[in-house]
Structure formats: structure tokens, C-alpha cells
Amino acid sequence: DTAVSQTPKYLVTQMGNDKSIKCEQNLGHDTMYWYKQDSKKFLKIMFSYNNKELIINETVPNRFSPKSPDKAHLNLHINSLELGDSAVYFCASSRTGRGNTEAFFGQGTRLTVV
Amino acid sequence: KQEVTQIPAALSVPEGENLVLNCSFTDSAIYNLQWFRQDPGKGLTSLLLIQSSQREQTSGRLNASLDKSSGRSTLYIAASQPGDSATYLCAVKVSNDKVIFGPGTSLSVIP
Image 1 (cartoon, helix red, strand yellow):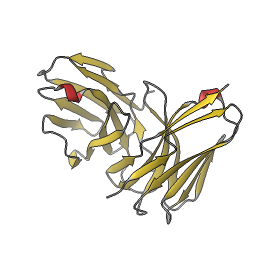
Image 2 (cartoon, each protein chain N blue to C red):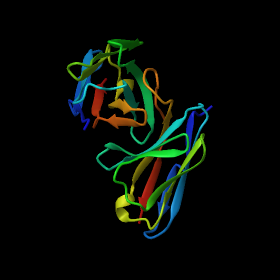
Image 3 (cartoon, helix red, strand yellow):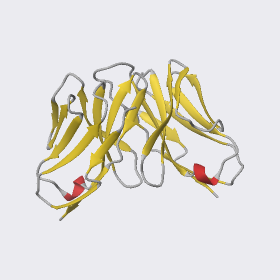
């Protein structure tokens, strides 16, 4: 069973389009995240959701909007796509708190904007 | 603001060698530290998690240590194999909702 799954795995689209990436976790975690991995392979946090509330937003353009229909899902919507949005986007989840709150990651979505 | 660095950026070793990867963080107030592995074009695989109250964790040929006061963690890989070739990332959890990654160390184990 896949713990954190995201779809699609690959997404190629034209500039100006609107697209969504879906993420689901079956671990019963209460916090989910979106990360962006750029061409230099650096992972940067974009959003996290805890109990359906947006907790942090790391200076991400407002063209990006996370939407969480329930605790197991955190989808990423991107409006008016730009060339610079091309990257690999990772979804992750963990339990809230200190201690053994291991984070689990999806396999990533490679977004290419042409 | 928490910053995470990893040294070296890249490492190439012959098969069978023991090796150490280093991770440093600027703020010792962390919840935990996690080591991941990422293969080219793939997602992240969790290797080890060290809670803030722990000093080390072991899994097979891997041993991770944590010295919170000095802001350092090391990942020790014993008897390296070609299959260990990947990028290794350390990540610190700094709050309930934030995990910050280092830039990674690219490891190549030569047969």
C-alpha cells in the first residue's frame, strides 16, 4: 500500500494554463505538506496543512493554492502557469508534534511548463 | 531562522569503504532530524529519524548521530555498496508544521 500518493507523476502543459496536482495519504497523519524541488535539487517547503488549516505559506505566489477536502488529501492548484514553475513537486505527511513524527513523501510530480 | 547545510556536496568512494555524511543546523531548538535518500528521478525514502532527546539511531549499515548543542548530525554508512549511490538529504523539524531540508550530498560508490 502506498502511504503517500500523488497524481499525476508527469505533467506537461502550456504557459497560462491552470492545473492541479492531487495528493492522498493513508497514514492517518494530521499534517500534510507541499514541497518544490528546483533544478538544483533543493527542496523548499511551500505549504503545510494541519487539521484543514493552512499553517505556513513560504512566500509562494498566490497563483498557487492548496486545497484540502479532508484530512487525507491536500491538492495543489496552480493558476496561470509560468515557465519558472517547472519543477518537481512533492507531497508529504506527518503526525503533529515532537518525537517520532516521521515525514513520508510521495513520489513527486514533474511539472514542465512549455 | 533555521538553516541546514550539508558537507560534502558530492562524494565518490570505492565500494567497501566506510563513509560519513555531515549535516549542520543553526538553531538547536529542533523537534527531530530525519535522513532521507533520493535516487535520480525518484521520491524521497526515509532512512532514519532521530528524536531531539536521542543521540543516535541505527538501521542495518546506517548509523545516524545527533548533537543538538553543536547543531550537527552525521550519517555513517558502513561497507558501502554501489546500490548506496544516491543523494542523501537531512531535514530538521522545527515546529509542528515545518520541516527544513539541507541541500543534500550526492554519493557515488564505485564498484
